[in-house]
Length: 54
Image (cartoon, rainbow, N blue to C red; front, side, top):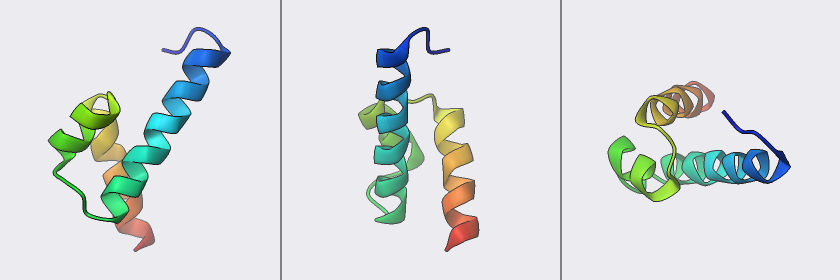
């Protein structure tokens, strides 16, 4: 859980990067997780959002 504004900004950027990677089909969820530093479960949640919008 983010504890300050810097952590929140970093997490927001990681989520945006993950969404962009998923939209462009750049890698598996595991690879997206590794590149962005997000937990794999979060990447799966974002992937569901991207799939619904597509």
